[in-house]
Length: 316
Image (cartoon, rainbow, N blue to C red; front, side):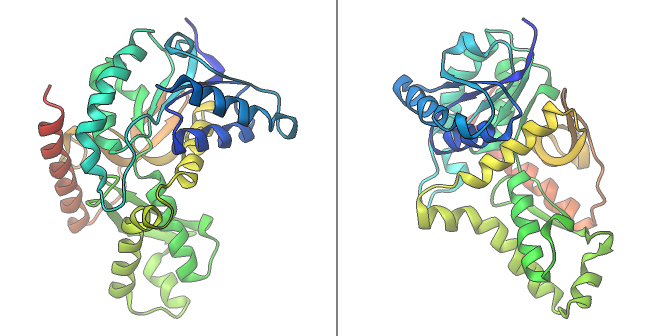
């Protein structure tokens, strides 16, 4: 079945799935959206609720469906899984959500989809690897939202720190979407001006202290939000929308997404985030960003951390 470039599917209608559906309805990217959930009534309720806003948006068909409805979707977004509870790390979710993926992914693969499989459920790196292996789809078409949201948080906090438009901040968070993530300071810049030079221009000279604080704030953002409102979903919903825009428009934009690594930076046999060119075919190629020795070592360590969890939770 050929891909319908105007159709998107969301598997899992919890907080993240519903927020992503709402964001995509407003985007105008798609004219058809199918929602799936283990609780069919939940999917039907979300479809109905979001559909009632269509007179304020663009024409779109939104409905609850089943796995057969996924076959021709251009992007299948998988948010299904247990949520992260207060005090729980993303990696604590591993075994519960790998078990859920062992049920979901083969059912998706059985429909022989030719679109993109976008993994958003946590821990996203482990589940992206599991989805790639369980689906048997070409690896370029299976990737996760990864550290795209962490990178947005990084840019936002740097923009606040420097009193500058955060869209002009160019910096990445790479590695695990979680506690071993790495803030890439060595190549960070504001419109081409190296980050430390820009900091000094704005009257900030205590670089080490600021770097530690901002990186920690990025890493702990999700924990803080979960502590305050029990879940995070708006930020990641906007990250999902941004990825879908890049795919639908074949933008070939560069974003840090999670995909299976084959030796880049010495990391192999695990999925984690490094910047990549993303377009209609998914991940086209990794982008070799400049890393200093400490960042390179930290990325390797992040990969090793994920590999240890993967070996325990997803023995192939």
